[in-house]
Length: 115
Image 1 (cartoon, rainbow, N blue to C red):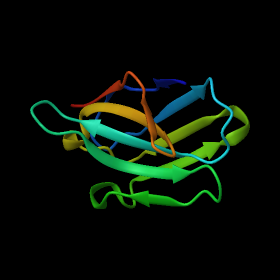
Image 2: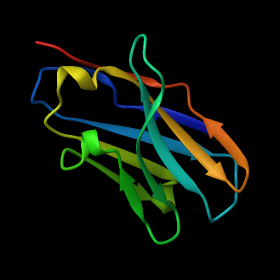
Image 3: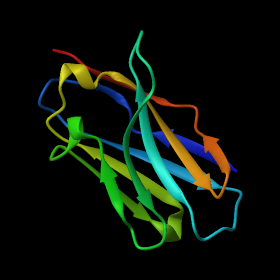
Image 4: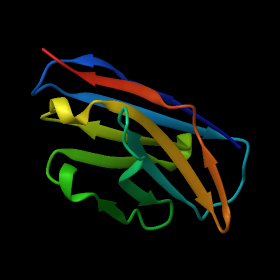
């Protein structure tokens, strides 16, 4: 299983970005895809997740109303739309795919919010 994140970059406070997580190398239909982030000197934290079946979602309180997670099962891709970005959102964002007891991580994409 391979996960490739993209879409990170430098954005000003109040701006938007859309991250993508493209998955390949598996055939399971039931899995959960999550976005995590890790800021310098801090622990990795869950941002949001979405299920492949049913499309159930859950968000961390600090992104509710600003971030939206979505999926395109035909492309095996999960997106994270980030609006109203704040300086505190600066971090490396990681994609994780979980199938039963197996977990796979992407390499991460840097998001920097700065004026």
